[in-house]
Length: 161
Image (cartoon, rainbow, N blue to C red; front, side, top):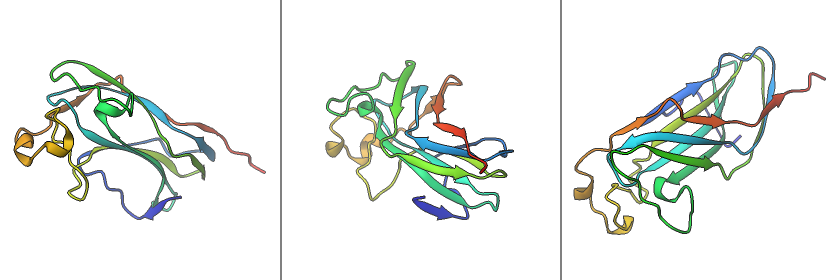
């Protein structure tokens, strides 16, 4: 695992957890998914993080994706979002996950908007992000996720032997 913590940081986002697992499973490979949403901005940065929650309650970071909405389809060319209109962003993680999640544990996914002051902030104006200023972010990001959004996690039943 990448990080172990007794708590989960879901500030600026949402956490989704499976039911408590009745049998162990293996998470192996890259996760993927699709965000369906409407926003008021032309761009935003986000994280999707995949965790194991152990039976003791600790969280182990298994994999993550950090992405800019306008570059998630094609990292070589920006495709700005259309404020007020439905959008679909398919995504794929670039970091392999490999872990055995024990019975009594859970798989947890955190989706959050990035607001880290130590990173280049995307204020959503659609300009080159390096040219944006805090004035471009005066209107807060308004993001409505659609129930059709999903994440696909490569999981298989763990060997018992």
